[in-house]
Image 1 (cartoon, rainbow, N blue to C red):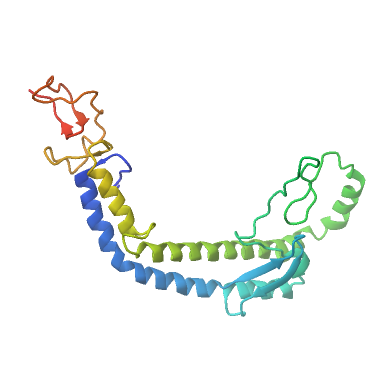
Image 2 (tube, rainbow, N blue to C red):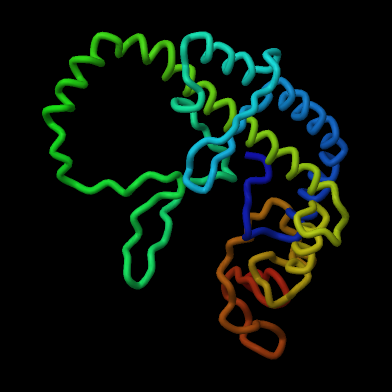
Length: 244
């Protein structure tokens, strides 16, 4: 696998990888243009909720977008958007509302009361099964299948937004945390730090294939004034090979 290394590597391996990733930067604008076109094709469907978790408004794109078509189909098949299709974006999570020193948590952020065991609803549940059973397949085909598609489309749209933002950030200068050049600068600093032995300085003993990148870290510094190295080791001066 190409460039199949993580945090343990040689300086030469990283130098080769820098050339590759910097060459890919020129393709970022084309990737962003493609992602934006796909984002426009998917469209949007968004809900607004009040403090009690009840939907107050929703907005969907025109019918030419994918979300718009799904939304139109959902309404055409009798779906009630306000009550049945309460989708949420990642910025609208459902979470447990905290209690205080006198009261345990009881509500979720969407207004639902925490359920407890022992509902004693066997009789009503049996009747609901009988009432619902003969339309179960119809509900799954007309409503639930469309609901899943709508939720997947919204998730996909958010993933596209995230990727576009990440690519835009990667193009920034080395002074911007999150840019490609910022990460390269930080990695170069580690590679040039003799105390950071995970990135091996292989200047004296070139190792472009990384064959010795995982050699054990030396417990002492072998050299002219110390005991000769008897095994492959990573030292503050880089890779040391056993003397013969």
